Image (cartoon, rainbow, N blue to C red; front, side):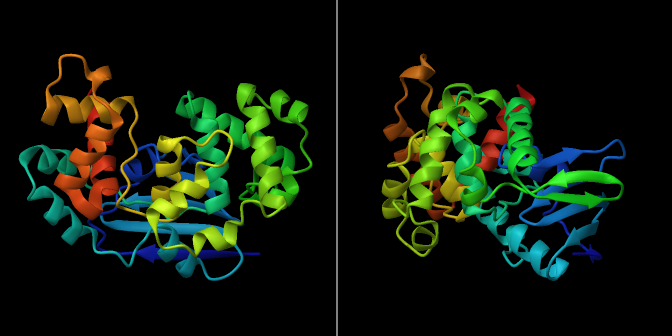
Length: 288
């Protein structure tokens, strides 16, 4: 591993707070100077933004530019994407203006599966602490700028944890779920490589739903944030709330079904539903 640096210039659709605080990732931590430090696979990366310039400094294997381009989805034209979505209606236009720097990260499939199983009925600070404890206990240590960081454990590494070990890390009722999912992956009952090669969103979803602790919302999050299936539409309390307030107007928002919401999202946002969801989610949660 070596220390590398990389700089991006003239980035309009790229704002650190919007990217890291919109609920899609759990390994990035805000620093006192407004920068962030995070772990991407086997890399520890420090990123700082000054207007439209983003500075990266990392300890990693491979070329840092390649890691950054893939993870931050830099080859996608987000300006064009936002213009298309903003033309749908003023609600969408306003939410995009609020979170204009959001990008959908291309995260590791395995890490995303475990992270979003942990996320069920949980809050972000607690999710981050649990993932950090798991990584510290079973991942690999990387020293960077005088501090220790830990990679997310591979299935082989996590298989060393018993249900009791996982419970002791604060997983609660999720301990058995993580244990069983790890076992299925190791035994190739759920083949990570093969499933990532599938193109059909519904087929991938059906495979994910066979995993303990993966329901429709968690499956959609995994597909959006690791496989970049932008046609999915993850629905949580905030998304149900904002969709009902803006478009449905049911006096009892909890009565609005998932089917109604997904049908509306596909009709309005089509194959960009997942990206629209992130703008709406971030705007509604932040202004509440």
